[in-house]
Length: 246
Image (cartoon, rainbow, N blue to C red):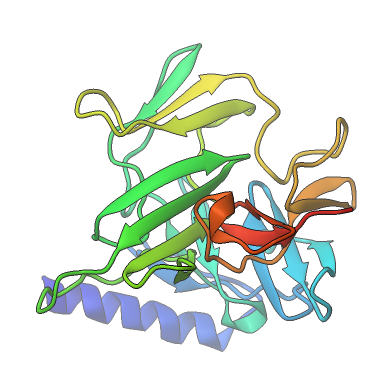
């Protein structure tokens, strides 16, 4: 069975590389190439239902057209830029939300990998801090789409950022993580301003800018969990230290 799955995955990559403009989907395929021809600059990422590119300068932020993806019940999460973008079906590596009119819960939220993590949802951006794996432990492959770096001032902690986490349908939702032993780890309640990628009306959170009428994040540089992790004149915003305007 494992051999068959490997062959199916390899076959998809070969087929997709032959026609980059037309992504192809086969039943049971977990990950596939989905070129993003509108990408520009140094790096790009999905943010909610839109797409952002950064560079060449450190504060250059542009909203670009997001490439179409094959049909999927829970959508796709992607990483990479331009012709090198690859996407994975969201039904892998996390549970679907269970919803009623007022709230949604996710029993097994998406994590950067199979290590030990503590996470928070900040303006629809998931930020997690984790600890180094014990020596000799074989890790599963990391989840696609995270930005990760060492936490400032520590030797064994990491900070990872997901700009396009799983979300319930029909925004807006206000989501949070619970670290109690009982209940679902992730809870989303109806209401709130909505995640980054929303319209700029009402202003944009610290660590983001208004570009093409959307609140879009600055390029991630993960390294902080709290403000004290940053230097003088900086605050921690969505896992990255940012200069505080004077």
